[in-house]
Image (cartoon, rainbow, N blue to C red; front, side, top):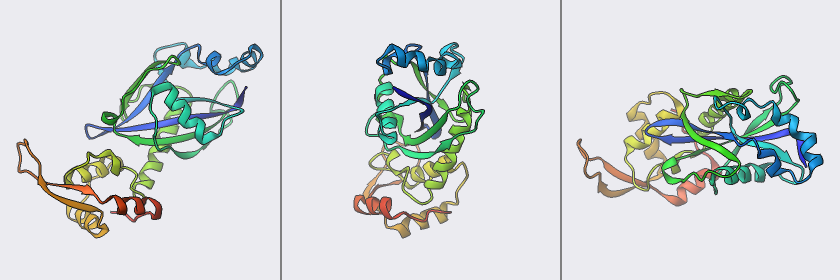
Length: 248
């Protein structure tokens, strides 16, 4: 059985080509049958899906998620539906909030618990499953038509990400093992959507004692080769637990 009034949505942000992208999907019409085991459960719940515009037209896209089964925990199910639908696993998901406007889904009262994650698509292979008709990355400022209030959920999650990244090293793992200070600054500028003062940024980073100089420089670049750094893993893990002050 599923809880008809509770659903889970995953907002997956991807950092690629110095842009924030969002992973969206179009679920297969047979999605409901794959998650329900009895005819009675299907009949009781099919109204939820019958009026979903994404199941009737290729024009509409939605966030990866579905209604919560009665025997699943919220956090675990968010990871499960993501793995089943896209093959993404071992992804850190953080709960954003619950969306409960009474008119957000026109045909039924549904509370949606949203989660977000930030990944580098180059490090993860998407595996299209039988429950997904299509899965695709879209640039944050070029989103297609989304079902219900999915757009509001996306930008609420983005706001949450921008708050979190100033107090926790949320996005550091998106960089390659060895990176330049310019790459690190660009990551923050893209996430925060604002230009940062280079001098202040580098001073802040140095004061955190988070970086290790590899004593190597970039190769095969047209411009002057920059120094390469890597993260001090022990300090990185401590900052994940204790938090940091990265407001610039």
